[in-house]
Amino acid sequence: MDPDSLPDAGRAVHGGSSLRLDFSANTNPERPPGVRQVYEAAFDASTRYPDEAYADYRAAAADYVDCAAEEVVPTSGGTEAIRLALATHVSPGDSVLVPTPSFGEYAREVRLQGATPAFVPHDEVLDSTPEHHTAAVVCTPNNPTGELVDPEALADFAARCRRAGTLLVVDEAFLDFTTTESLAGTPGTVVCRSLTKLFGLPGLRMGFACATGDPYERLETARPAWNLSTPAAAVGAHCLRQDAFVERTRERVARERERMCEALVEAGYEVFDSDAPFCLLDVGARSVDSVVEHLAAEDIAVRDCRSFGLANHVRVAVKRSAENDRLLEALARV
Image 1 (cartoon, rainbow, N blue to C red):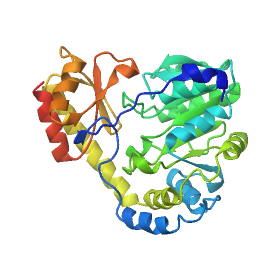
Image 2: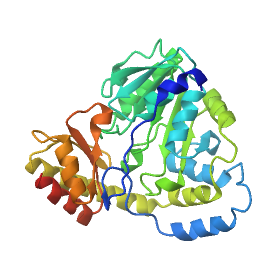
Image 3: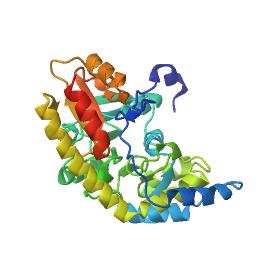
């Protein structure tokens, strides 16, 4: 991290609200069975430092994304994985390909290294030339637009980055809402995963990175000691083995997302195609302020997307059927 760049890095804007129905954060409203019991058992073990090997957590993560346990780096959420990837490869003066609109932490982390984000439309990153860039970032499905990157095109881009000596950082925070295979285990690539979205536990800060060879060695060396708490490691390993829960969640999100999109189009909103647990809406003739304020008056929060550079858009998460109905009814009245 470049100390001289700190004053200009700023903070990224994220979702999350204290309103009763929060559609601004893309987290699952349901948790896997047994989580509380695992957490309580781990709490009793928290009088000791965590086991630095994190062997069980690494094994569960490796099985989940189909890579070797020796390629997994435990992290405190997906954002730490992103930071480690960029901090261990990017230096002041470097250039990094960054998609836009997309997750605000990419550009922030690039700037924290004293480097320059080279912004590219999110759906054109794979057509970019990676030469002359130290790293390139891809988000799939992209946040906030929601579409999945074509896996074959992504694999081809990874190969081009590898030949150019450009590190590819792939943020797969929402990929487990799909059946698409992870890019974990691909040489020259750092895959960043978050457990907080699908498993609905953002406060526990669970995630991991996957890399091979020199990128893995850099991440593992730079990883802070005991960066994953004992409860987070235990609950994370438990969640990663809940195959039935993952399948049920995928089915519910896909079903509800389709239903929500149809209702929103009927209500006069332009809805972007999405493979993620959220939908991006163009509010049309309405103003973003009027939509946000109207919903807030009904104790409902949505994500104002102006911080993504989208002047006329909001993002809404996909929750459970009854909660989604409340949102749809409220949006139809704006």
